[in-house]
Amino acid sequence: MQPSLVGTGRINTFNKGHLTIVGTTFVVMNINFEGKRILVTGAGQGIGKELALRLSNYGGQVIALSKTKQNLDQLCAEDPRIQIVCVDLNDWNATRKAVENALPIDLLVNNAGVARLNPFFNATEKDFDLTFSVNVKSMLNVSQVVAKNLIDRKVGGSIVNVSSQASQAALLDHTVYCSSKAAVDMLSKTMALELGPHNIRVNTVNPTVIMTEMGKLGWSDPKKAQTMTSKIPLGRFGEVSEVIDAIVYLLSDRSSMINGVALPVDGGFLAT
Image 1: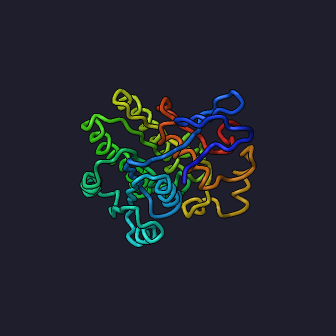
Image 2: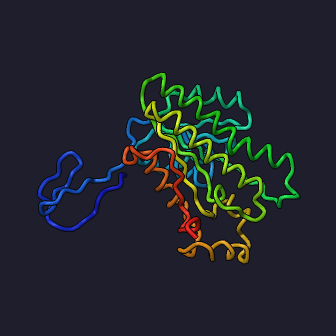
Image 3: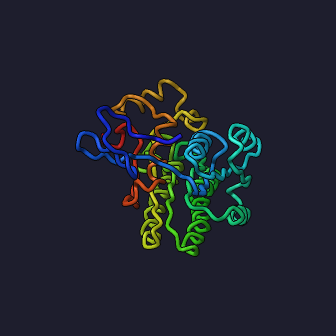
């Protein structure tokens, strides 16, 4: 299944991705990942799981990474074409070895993340260490392995790091989480700077609240949720599919000149 341009009018020609309709040429924005090996971290549930399924449907050979074997088995039951890697991203060396064993990787989505939500004075050392280990440190680790292999093979690639609107807006009780996502944005920009000359693009997507299991941790209370949705011009939280659409675009060649960007998927929250 591939995205395709839908329109009206008489089609005069169809050749090499172009439709000519009544004298006007439209580029068909087909996105196809055939022949591409795509690593998705945090692929056991939520955005990562649905992303893995979508990318597989678009022809990519997906390698799904998670620390929870049961979740990976369920994913494979839904799509047996998906390969799995079970490893705890908190373990630097084990992660490095697991990713090396999965090479070559052409496209990477660093999606794994955790949220330990406490007010500033209640934030603990454990909160900080776990959050930064998964949300930032593992991103550096996995990206180093993948990017080095791309450079060794002399091929370009695309890396998408999943950040958050919390990287740019302070949220109540999100001291450590906001800090980790701000670090993700700057890590991604420096990666874009250093990897760009090798034709490796690095971007982030920065969603608003998405009601995955993680999203429910902070926003399941209707009163608290209202304090957020009231600040979103579109008046609602985002859908998983809307985040995936942005990731797919940034992975694809259709975004070939986009590098070092933090793309909000937030209904206008950061614009207010």
